[in-house]
Image (cartoon, rainbow, N blue to C red):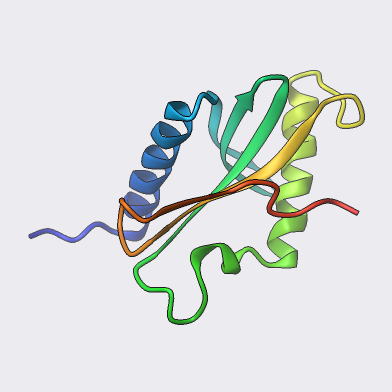
Length: 122
């Protein structure tokens, strides 16, 4: 059996997260949007709300679940990246409804945990 490298594993779980969220009714807008300040794994839309999704995977949750790896520093990078993504689309962060979610896989593809509003800015 072959082993996936870190990027291949990340790409696989991002693809699975996107499929999962689409099954929940969200619409994919962008993926792997890169900026100098950070990267947005997935950008989705749920109704009128833009949803920035961080995808995490952990084989085991012994040191905390996958969502626990989203530090304050990571949150700041996500927020800055989201502001840049919105501006690139011609949208204002003050006039656009958006939130940050996480899709965490812990132990395998069937152990998916969708966490809405992983942090609130301010």
